Structure formats: structure tokens, C-alpha cells
Image (cartoon, rainbow, N blue to C red; front, top):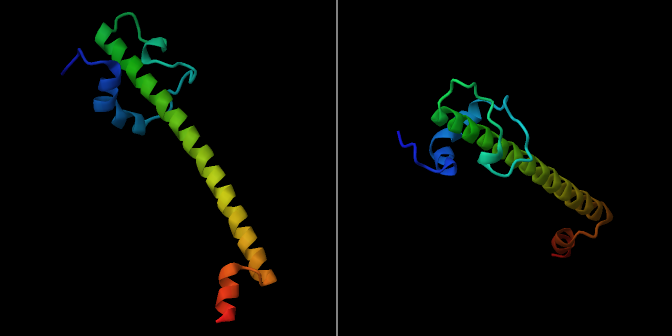
Amino acid sequence: MEVDQSPEEYFHQHAAAALLRSDADDVDDSKESWSEIEDASSTEDDPVVSKKKRVLRYGRNRLSEMRERFNDAKARLYEEKQQQLDLEWAQLQDGTHPQYREFIDQ
């Protein structure tokens, strides 16, 4: 086990799978770096365990942020597609849809 990795490297290699199992420990999303996340480890935890816990919390926070951005983008995309569909439906009902007009003119 390599301990001298940067936390980001460790996260990418080892902690990603654990993030998918549990999001229950999501904490303060305003932290920008793994090292700024407070350590909830007990005093008897060794430094390696404490570091891994911070990396895991950092990864969970990042995953939570990505999920939020994804859900926002998904909602925007849905709304745009719904508006386009409504417009095309109105054009079809009015007989002004370009593809419909092309089909009728043939």
C-alpha cells in the first residue's frame, strides 16, 4: 500500500468505489481541498487513517457537487427539449412545421 501519494491520487485509485456505496456522511460542501476538511477521527487513529478519512470525505463532497450539477443540467435539458417539443407540436397543429409542409407538398 502506497502512503506517499497525494490525496487526490489516492482518491482516484482507491476511494471512488467506497463513495458509491454510501453518501450518508456528506459534510460541508464549501471546502475546496481535501486538506481543509475537518477530521472527525478519534485521537487514537493514526495519521494515515485520518488522512484517508479526510480524502474519503473530500471525495464524497466532490461526488455530491457533481450529482447536483448533473441534476441541474438534466433539468435544464429536459426543459429545453420540452419547449422544442411543444413548439413542434403547435407547428404540426397549425400546419406550419417545415418537415410536415415538405411532406405535404410532395
